Every structure is written in structure tokens, then in C-alpha cells.
Length: 301
Image 1 (cartoon, one colour):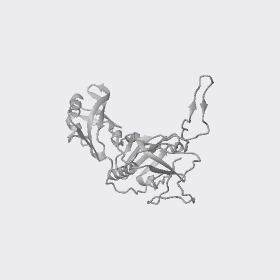
Image 2: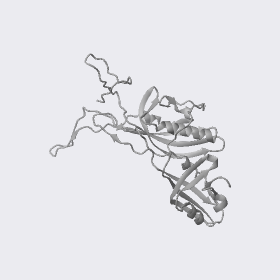
Image 3: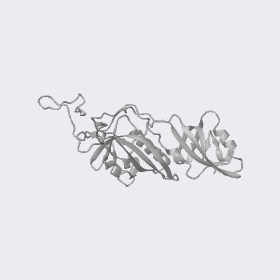
Image 4: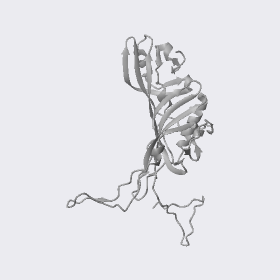
């Protein structure tokens, strides 16, 4: 049990008789949620207009389950990790080092002289991935989903759920409604139809042949996912514009040799429409006007 977890360079088993218990590693893999971007919800347009020029991440809470397996008592360990300042947590088997502070102990069960307990840590300043190598692996399971034109199996990822939700129509925006006391019900403008944005949660499985491969793929996927601007998600010959929201339910399945984990990925699709029309700016002689960069001008009717 020695050598599995170090905090501030101290082996917590040797020093305190404490180990990371069972699935306690799961949330150490998690990726932070995106800070809510500025947005406009125009009633006359489908979806929302989102400012993604400078995406930023939220702080992240990480719950780790520990077990006291030798009779030192849990209090010296908790006093150590909850002291002033930040702790450096290092899991050599995962190739993972994080700078964290303690928030609380949400779970505790004592079985004298042992104990099981969870500690919630906070990562106040998560880093946006940068400088990662291009992801281009072959896992032998081609995926029908693409991210900005690249099949996501090239990131070592397969999608295990949520594709039916991708194709489901979003809610309609509420049109002009009037309610008058003398009438039953309300008067609703049913001739005006616009669609709202929608969120879709995908089940994902990410694998890497070795620890270093896993983190390269991890950083490449999330780094590409949160680049400025909207992402293009392709499926069954259709493209959908979306942006990253959050991840949940991380589960480490293997970290001996091949590293494999599952997680839920939530994306917000901002302009989903059924049989929508596009209005482009044109001159009086019906020639489409383009910008210096060669793009058409969408009037966003």
C-alpha cells in the first residue's frame, strides 16, 4: 500500500495508515464545468447567441474516499490535510498531481480502530489544457460522432449514450401571449415559431494504452472542446452547433496498463431548428454579398 498516494510529498499510508479506498480515485479525473458565458436570447431567433470569445472554467470540487487501515486514528490525518494553505496531492499510478484545499468531510463511518470517510477538496484554479499533441489514435471502434470534422474515436473516445437525445427536437420558445380577465384561457400567437436551445448529455468512454497516452488524449479532447467559439458536432450527415457545459459521473475502470474511464458529457446546442430558413444579405441584383474573409452575411431573421 506504500507509494499509492502522496500529499505534500508524504506517503499517507506510511505516515497516517490511510489509503484511498475503492472508487476514491474517480473524481480526480473529472474536468471542470464551463463558467456560464454571456448570452442573448432573442425572441425572433432560434436558440441563443453566446459569447465564447474567452471561455473560462469554474473551480472544481473533488470528493475522495479514504480508509484508515492502521490504528493511528483519523484525526492526525485530517488535521494535516485541513491545515492552512494548499495541499499537493500526487497519485503516481495515475500520473496525476493536483493543488487542492480541503472543504469538508461529507461522509464518515467509524469501525474502531478503523474508519471510512470522504474528504471534499476544491481546485480553485484549474488549468485549461494547452500544448498537447494532436490526437489521432486507432482504437478499432470508429465512432459516428465528429468534433469539428474529426471523429471522436481519434481522441480514444466512444459514445455510449445520448445520441437519440441529439436528434430530438428542442422546446419551442414562448411566443406573444395575452391574458385578459373577460376571456377563458389566453390568446397565443401560434403563427410565430422559434426553437429554444437544448442540452444533451452523452455517455462517453475514454481509453489510453498507457497513462501518458491517456492524459494526452484527455487534454487534446477537452482542449479542443473548449477552444473559443462554437463547436460543430456531426452525426448522420448533419452538423449541430454547440458548446461545452460540464462533465459528471466519472468512473475509473482501469489504471493498470490501459487506462479506461467513463463519464457523462453535457453540451448545449444553441441553434437547433426544424426546417429552418437562412436569410443572407444580397445586393439589388440578387448577388450574395461576402465579407473580406469570403463568408456570407447571415441576417439572423
